[in-house]
Length: 42
Image 1 (cartoon, one colour):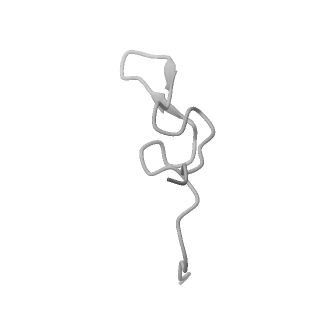
Image 2 (cartoon, helix red, strand yellow; image 1 turned 120 degrees about the vertical axis):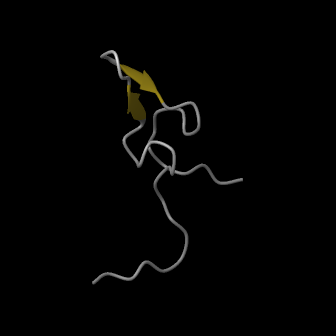
């Protein structure tokens, strides 16, 4: 079992992939992280 300490580094919306898989096929860039897959620091 792994413990995660500190801040999460991957985007929560796209799970670190940088894109969403669309239901009708294809993919779309994650607007939250801008496609980087990393959580933006605010």
